[in-house]
Structure formats: structure tokens, C-alpha cells
Length: 131
Image 1 (tube, rainbow, N blue to C red):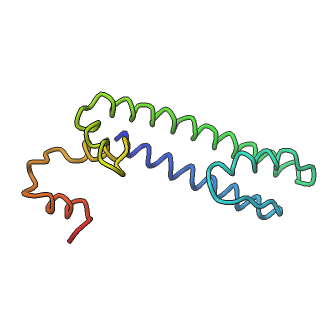
Image 2 (cartoon, one colour):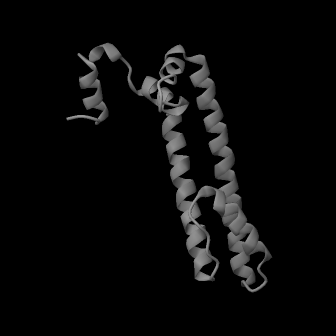
Image 3 (cartoon, rainbow, N blue to C red):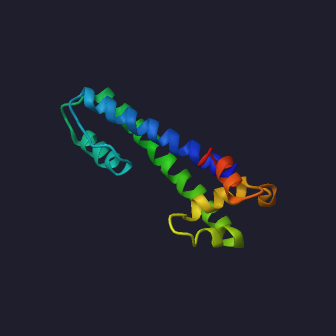
């Protein structure tokens, strides 16, 4: 559930950032992709006197929602990292190159019984990495 909620928050934040960028583009304000580009765009929008007042108000609403999603995402990720630190198997998996705490945590949470797989190949097939 923890990783599913995180995924949902990330999806909503992405949708909202795309909507903000799209609406801003309708007014001639362009921003590059990336979550780090949204807050500067919102600041530019707030300072732009050429935008209609209603549009600026609606961007403020979207900006508050974007900030709220960011706060909730940080809280969920803090809980996820705390769970990771408390779980020995997750910490052990995170020592593998290219496996960070989030992937390690997800693997431990989703794989209830590793002994159910006859080999690493069967596990990889279950993950969808090999046929």
C-alpha cells in the first residue's frame, strides 16, 4: 500500500505539472519538462501582469495543489525510507549496484516468499525481465 500510494502521488503530481505547463503555454509562458521547473514557472506567472486576474488565481490554486502533493510525497517517502532502514533484507538488497532503497523496499514488500521460485530465472520471469 505504501508504494502504491507513492506511485499515485507521483502520477497526480506529473498530471498536475503537465496541466500547469499546458495552461501556461496557452498564455505564451513556456517551461521545460521536469518537476524542478514548475515552481519557477508559477513564480513567473504570479509576477506576470499581462495575465488575466482569473488565470493568475487559477494558477495559484494549482500551485497550492502542487505544493500539497509535494509535501505528501515527502511524508510517504520518509515512511518508506524508515521502513527500509528497519528491514534487514531491504538494506541488504540496496547494496546491489543500481538497486536503491525504493526498489529494494518494493521487492521485499511484493515478494512474500522468495523460496517459491525454483531459481533466479523464475524470479526474473515473474518480475517480467525474462520470458
